[in-house]
Length: 211
Ligand code: SAH
Image (cartoon, rainbow, N blue to C red):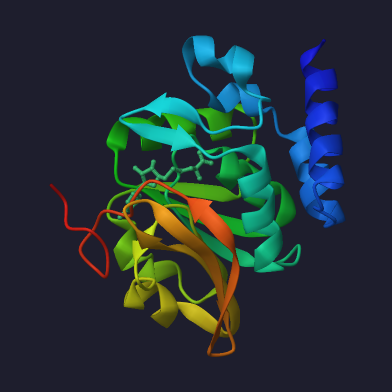
């Protein structure tokens, strides 16, 4: 099967699995996921599972990326913050769906690789930052939407809630020891979307402390 066929089959599985947002499906039908999976694992880029990307981290399974981006409900002009760049794949999907993206990764080698991949593919509406994402990106706030792709301990870091525009939506996995729920915060309310497993959010504000 060609890479294009594998990508089309992935989109059909997402659709069958209940992803309906046409912009998310179109973005995931375009972004070459294999370019964000390093080395030999790129052969498995279109599997329905998370994959190792180095530094003990993973690229989220396609369905989790689709659900997270769709849950933001962000329009084509939206200014979006992602915490946990990882491979950069989620940032690429956000870049195709939204107006501008700031993404923050604490591991410099992952941030550098993601920046290179995004630049090589021409996604020029994404800024990749290296650092502790629990502080957000105050100089680029407010954000219409914030997507956290590592698991917060009990609640999202307060700086991220503070940097959300009044009409904004924040989606964050919340739980303990990597297991919990994907939770959507908007209009002062929290809504549990589905049970999920994620690597921990490690940082200073409302997260596991760095070890
Ligand atoms: N969105 C990613 C998946 C990321 S996995 C993708 O599409 O590939 C979660 C990432 O969050 C890991 O790379 C991890 O290093 C990062 N992370 C964890 N805590 C962080 C923090 N405080 N600030 C920034 N990145 C963090």
